[in-house]
Image (cartoon, rainbow, N blue to C red; front, side):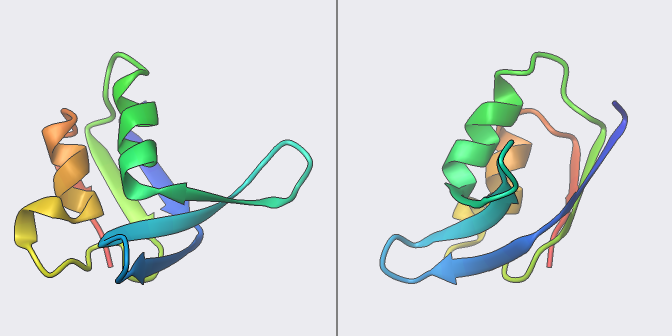
Length: 84
């Protein structure tokens, strides 16, 4: 895929210092996934999309610029990320 558009609920966990995404599992139940878990899942896919676009609250939030979810995806090999 060239573009991955992620639409979900998101929030920044100030205790863990990480974005958490609410994704739907096979049973249509919400599953909480940390930004690190999401980046790891995407990295394991092999070829990365050229762009990941998040429509998820607080997906770009972080007290440090290089540890946000967007930054983690760039470190995992995604060339461009747009996050809220």
